[in-house]
Every structure is written in C-alpha cells, then in structure tokens.
Image (cartoon, rainbow, N blue to C red; front, top):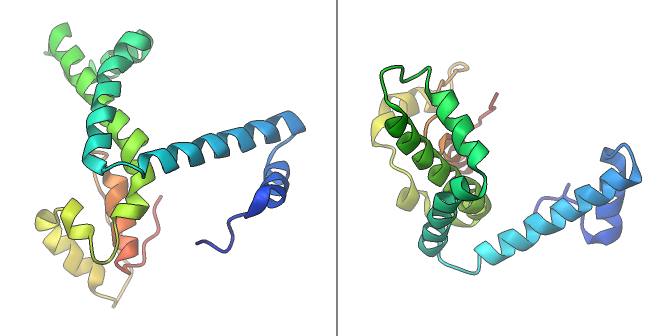
Length: 170
C-alpha cells in the first residue's frame, strides 16, 4: 500500500479539500474516488477474461448510447485514412471504442493485480523490444524510449517499472 495515499474518510476529505477550489468540487472528488474504488473492487471479483468480454460488449453498445463519440472518432480518423469510405472509417472507429472500453473499464483497474515481477509474461509479449530492452538495461547513460500511441502502451511502462527499470514518462 502506498504510504502517501490517504486512509480513512477524514484523511480523504482533507486531501479532497486541499485539491479542490470549493466544497462542492471536493464532494465531487470524493464521490469520484468512491465510484472508482467500487468499480475496482467489482472488477477484481471476476476473472480478467470475463471482464474483458463484458467491456467489449460495453464498447459495442457505446456508439448506440453516445453516437456523438462514434461521429467524433470517425472525424478524427478521416485525415489519417483519406481514401477510406465512411463504412470503413466507422468499422475502425467502432473497434477503437471497443478497445478503449477494455482498457479503461478493465485493464486500468486490474493491472496492479495482474502485473507483477512473476506474472508479467502472461500478459506482455516482449519479443519485439529486445534491442530496446538491452539499451534500457545498460546503466552507462540515460535513454529516451519513444513508443507509438498504439494498444495499451501504458501497460508497458507500468510493467517496466514493476520489473525495476527506472522510468519517467512524459
């Protein structure tokens, strides 16, 4: 457990008040913290595979519930795929929404439980970063590792930190 994390309602309230500009915002922060804690507890009651399937379903429902997000995703994809028709752009956008649902509803809250020094190899494939890993493990000087904004790239940074590789992310 992180020693800096507030424990108890009184400490949580003090931390929320210290961060918030007013009481209403502090109450909102406390509510968001409680909701995230409840969600995290719920997700950790079930196997990751079941949660990922559920999140995929949520990702399929997302465009129906909030069609503006699908429209926005299609609009953002259009410059990258100028020759794609609307159906193809929508297919890609729907896949992105399913992926985001999995990352933010499941992986974000389950990563600390799943990734450790002993279990990381079940969830991460390091086959294609061998050269980068060798450079990172060489302590003779500082390094900069540039990764694409693709997949759950945050997971790689978390795993590297758990494996003892000092890392600072920007």
